[in-house]
Image (tube, rainbow, N blue to C red; front, side):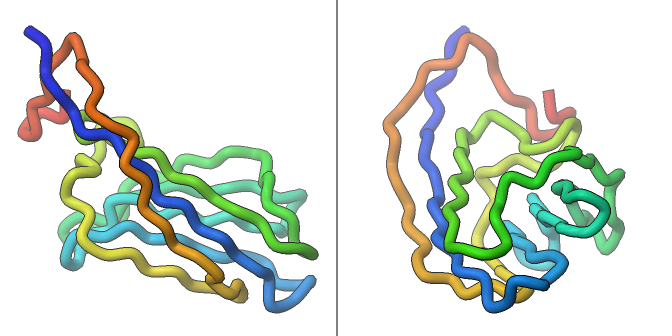
Length: 131
């Protein structure tokens, strides 16, 4: 059975406020839960941490050992959503995002939402089992 899923993206444009800052974060939230904690860090060679906060408890961090964002010049970040996909393994569905929080020594120049259309998926999403 096919399921229709809305697909869109959020585009951010940032400018660093300092060339020596150590990290920044983008949190996609639903009330007090953080559906995606996206946290690029510049110490130890640079890496990106992903996580979720659900019911006042952090999940297991997922680390990517490369930080593609420059410290010394403006950069962009695009996050792609489709409602049947969880950002992280076994995590909260992206359809619940209702606020965005940005922290750290970056200036937000732009936040833009882009509708990418409807896609047909050959699977269904069960929010109870996240499968």
